[in-house]
Structures are given as C-alpha cells and as structure tokens.
Image 1: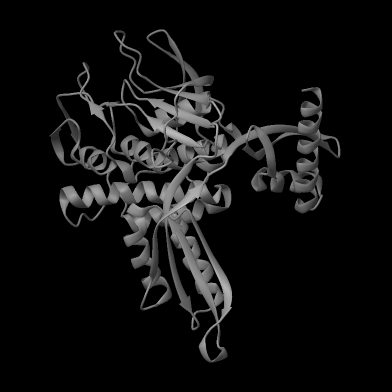
Image 2: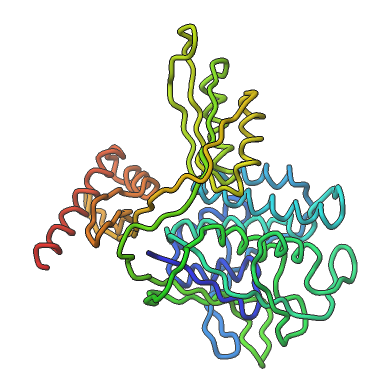
Length: 400
C-alpha cells in the first residue's frame, strides 16, 4: 500500500504542499497544466532553506477578493485542464474554507487572501499533484502553527488565524504551537491537509520509504529550514484483505431524467461518496425507473441522504448501515510502452490478494493523452498498456 506522510513541522501553506508533492515525484506537467488554467505558468525552482534543498512554487498572481460562488466559477473554468477527481477535491477544500469563514465571521461576503488566484492555483496544483501520485492513504503528522500575532484583511489577529483554527477543529488533526513566531500554517494549508487526511490509510505499521519531497515557503530564516516534508512510503502487504465499514443509501426514482441523474451522481462524489450508481429497474405497475445507490462513510451518510433528496426530489432514502466490505491492496505501477515511435511510462493500477496480482487497469487520463498524441483510439491504448503490464508481471512470476 502506497501512503503519503506529511510532516508539517515548520507549518503548511498551499505552495509548500504543492512543492513537496512535486519533489516527491508528482506529475509536473499535469500540475503545471492545471495551475495555468487559473494563472500564468507558475515558476517552479529549486531553492535552499537553511541547508535543505526544496522545491519552491510561485504563481506570481495578483490579489483578489471573491465569493465562494466566484471561486467555484473559476474552478469550473479550469475543468478542461484538471483531472475530475482533483477538481472535486479542490471544490471540497474551498467549501471547508468557506465553512470556517462563515463560522468566524457569520455570513461573510468575500474570501480575502484565500480567494486570490494564487490560492486557487495552489489548491488546484496540490490536488492534481496528490491525484497523480495515486496513493492509497495519507497520514498527517502534528501541524506546527507558530505563535504571536499576524496581520490580515481583518486586522491583527492571534495565531493561529481564526479560520485556520476552525478548519483544524473540524478536521481533528493534531497541532502544536512550535518554537517559531509568526503564522506557519495558513487556512489554505490547513484545508488541504484536512482534505487529504480523509484518504485514511488505516493502521500502517512498518513501511519502506520510496521518495522524499521538500516544499519551500517564501521566508528563509537561518535558524530553521522553512520547508514542509512529505514521504512516499510502501507499507507491508497485510496477511489478509483489510476491511472497513460503509453505509449504503438507496432510493427508487421514476420521474427523473438521465441528465439529472448523471449530474446528481457527480454531486454525490464531490460531496464525499465512495461510489454512486444508477441501475434500471421495473417498479410497481410496470413503470420503468432507476435504483440510485450511494456508498459512503457512516459519518457522511446524513448529509449525503439530504443531498440525494434535494437533487432527486425523492421523499425517502433507505439506509443500510454498517456494511462491512473487504478492500483489496492496490498499487500503481509504471509500465513503459512504445506506440508509433512514442515511448511513455503509463500508470497501471494493480489489485493484489495473497501476494498475487489479480487485477490490472490502465489509468484513463494518461491513456487519453497518449491516444491524442498517436492518433490511436483510447480503448486500443488502454488495451495495449494492460497487455504490456500483464506480460511484465507474468515474466516476473516465471522468474520467481
């Protein structure tokens, strides 16, 4: 199992998170493409922070005050360049920030610093970077907040900033003040780490470090490296398939169009559902309809049930609580393939049980890009990549 471990010993900000993920092996081209949907191409450089080499990301964007609706509109405009799961995660990050701002200020009119283009680009970049690493879990170590006071759009405030404190309260993440004065963790950094921590790795145990990345902050004090560290680790395969618990929400509808159902399923996934589907059924009196099913974590089932009622207009949602499910171990392997003279490394998601691979699935987005470059149908690219993967693993098993 591939797990990311964030160590925000010197705090966390959006640019530091993006830099650390890039330094640990995230897809730089995908991240730059996603961020340039909002700002000009960002500057990505290697810098030194108190003796530590780190990656610095600078969007060079101008300040702006926006409402949540304005930010969501900016995210919608970025959709063609951002992977859908990363975009959905970015939306949830800003909803976390909006909830915190509302908790602090009441019905606030605008985001301030976190509504600027650089914050939007940082969030999109960080979410795209995490998506490209295809990890199975994220663990966040205690976040160093700093101490003293800072000055922002609402004047001087104690550290942590009120919005940062509200985000951390809802996330349950551990925090410490640390030994350094000043604001070390921003609301954007707190919201990103809170969202990433939702990808729960469970009990990781022993692990092997595969990659280490450092993301640099803007300041460069001599007494301590202003960096955020992330480690990409591989945990030992469990002896048997792990389990977790989910709720299953269901409702039948016969008066909702396919377009509305497709939109609703997208909304359910954005709101944190683990899966969502629609199955054609025959209802009473021979009427055709659909069974809408949402799989979710127990703590999100009340809000998702309410969302199902609003989006579908249904009057009742059945809940099958505490369903145990087995979750196979997953890894993402890079498979080198050459098509029409173009050589690429393509990510392939593999399912394992009992130490043996039983499932191979090429990732769609990289295959779509390669299909466009080669002029070959994407279904053929997917097939060729998966065949190459199976061939490689058969060879390895034969040698074993």
